[in-house]
Image 1 (tube, rainbow, N blue to C red):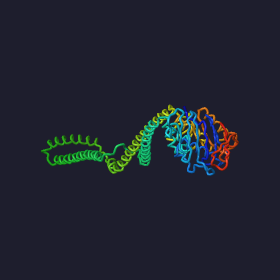
Image 2: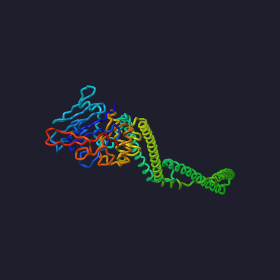
Image 3: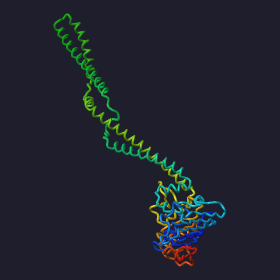
Amino acid sequence: MAMKIAELQIENVKRVKAVKLEPSENGLTIIGGDNAQGKTSVLDAIVWALGGNKYKPSEAQNRDSILPPKLHLVMNNGLVVERAGKTSALKVIDPSGKKGGQQLLNSFTEELALNLPKFMEASEKSKADTLLRIIGVGDQLAKLDQAENKLYNERHTIGQIADQKEKYAKEMVYYPDTPNEPVSVYELVQEQQAILLKNAKNREKREQKEELKKKLDEAENAIIDTEEELEMLYERRNELTEDLKTAEKTVENLHDEETAEIEKKLADVDDINRRVRANLDREKAEDEAREHRARYDHLSAEIDDIREKRQHLLDSADLPLPGLSVTDGKLTYNGTEWDCMSSAEQLKVATAIVRKLKPECGFVLMDKLEQMDLKTLKEFGAWLEKEGLQCIATRVSTGDECSIIIEDGRVKGGDASVVTSRKQEATETTDWKGRGAF
C-alpha cells in the first residue's frame, strides 16, 4: 500500500501557530494564502516530521510562542508520527505494534518527495541518470553511450583526416597530358644509341661506296696505261661495276633517322617526370581521402545502429510517464528537453519520476504552485488523482482552488479552536479547516 498523509497537526513551527489539515487522499490539496503567512512553514514541518532532524529548520520555533514545536501526523495505515517537547523527540506509533523510528519512516518516504526542488534543480545529466536508474537500463545505456562516444570520436578523427586529404589533393598540381609512368632516361639513351649505331653503319656503307668508286677510277686508268692488263682489268672492271650497282641500290634504300625527338625528350625528361610524380601523388591523396571517407560512412552506420538499439531499449522500458525518454544524455518529455518544458510539465515529470523511485511513497510536497494557471492546475490535479498520488502544495492565492487559506499562521475561517498551552498567559485561538482538494 502506498503511504499517504491522512491527517496533520502543526503547532509553533516557524510562521505556523496552529494548523490542522486532512489532505485529500488523491489529487491536490492546496494551501493558499498571501506571502509570509505560513504556507511554506506547513510543508517544512511535514518534511521535518517525516525526513528527520536533518530537515529541521534553523529557527524551528515560532517567534511569537513560548512553547516548542509540536508535530502530529497520521498516515493512511494508522501509523502516527509525532515530534514534541523541547528536543522535538521523534515518536512513531505503528498500529501493528512494531517498533519504529526514523528508519521506519525512511522505508516508505522518498527524499525527493519531501524535497522536489532538489530534483528539479539538478543537472540535466543527474535527472537523466535518475530516470535511467529507476527503469533499470542505466548500465546498458552507459555501455551503449560509451561505444557510441568511442565510435563518434573515431569517426570525427577520420572525418578530419579525410577532409584534410581531400583539401590537400585538390590543392596539388595535376597535369592531364602527362604519361602515367615516369620516363626512363636509360631507355631513351639506349634508343638514341641504337639510332646512332644504325647511322654509323650507313655512314660506313657510304664510305665503302666511295672507295669502290675510287678503285674503279684507278682500274680505268690502269686500262689506259696497261694494255696487257686490259683483259684482266676489263674483267675486274665488270666485277667492280656489278658491285657498284649493288652498292648503289643498297644506298638508295638507306634512310637516316633523326634523333631530335629523343634529344628533346632527354631535355624535357626532368619536367615530365616531375609532372608524373605530381599526378601520382595527387592520385594517392585522392585514394587515401576516399578510404577515410568510406571509413567515416561505416562508422556513421555503426553509430546509427547503436542509437537505434538505445532507443529500442528506452521504448521497451517501464517508464514512469508516457513520453519520457533520455536523448543525448538529457531528460526529454514528448521530445522536449527540461529547460524548454513548461512549469506544469516539469512538475508532472518530476512527480512521476519521484513516485517511481519509491512506489510505497504515495505523496509529494510542492511549494509555490502559483506558477500554474487555474486550467493547468485542474489538469495537474486530475492527473494526480488518476495516478493515485497525493500532493500537498502551497500557492500564493486566496481563491476557491485552495483547500485551506493560511492567515498569520492559522487556518482562516476554521470551525474549531485549541489551547496551545496552559502556561501561556492568554489563550490563543486555533482555526481549522477540514479536508479539501482541487
